[in-house]
Length: 355
Figure 1 (tube, rainbow, N blue to C red):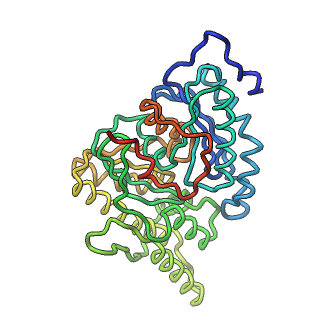
Figure 2 (cartoon, one colour; figure 1 turned 180 degrees about the horizontal axis):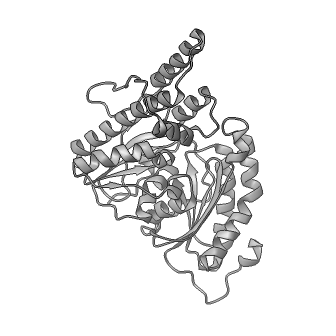
Figure 3 (cartoon, helix red, strand yellow; figure 1 turned 30 degrees about the horizontal axis):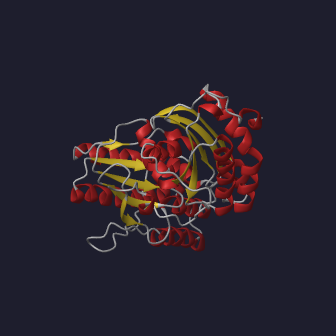
């Protein structure tokens, strides 16, 4: 077990750029070993989707319990698959927030224990910084750049003028994109998580039910999807009250086109306004085929380089946490052992120290 690997032999020093990363912010238990912030030596992810599917969403208490049951095994597997041992690690990184506080706590306790036992630094890491720097695992990021973060809990436009410096220039005022997808899927009685099912229906649709776009103020980079969700529910209720057969695929396509048009338009406008050299797509909804296709087409037309992680790096995983944590490791910016899980953790506050 892990305890048998904790005692570092005399004279053996860890490699100076190896991070053991842990991610337990929601319903994936993950551990990874990352070298130099770019090279994945292992990335083990245990998903709880099948468990939460029966409830139509993540149940925080169940998520935390499952993290407790699997965290040790996942860490052991990640270390084994990396071909290294715990003695080779130079730092322990863990998601500090945002996320479910009980779920975060499981990973944080594991990370603190390893940090103390191995006598190596602890790096509390921002979850959204992880999603953004998942791109660093497969691409070269050029600054200044703009990140479009789309996930179950977040929809943000983040400007990065320099490496590790984050400025949120736009955010959702209500539902995040992934949350809106799940609510629409639930209204259509589709399984959880709803995003992939809506995406599949939309791509296969032959017709479109046109839905409104929420542009907000003319100069705003913020987003709003609660009104769109209400418009979808109105269409469903109208068909049911009138006894009409609803073309669910057409509705899914209309919903996805509305979401995509707003996201793409605002993201490209932000790129132009701030003089960004690249656009980074990040987060779980970055796996959405409709969004990827629309964004790629617009970026290609405007000759804006678009970076998108592979599907396995879009969803929550520890490799992305290791990639972001490397920003702090190479600057020797470490976290005290009194760190607590922070569900409202500010991305801008996690920026690397300037100077």
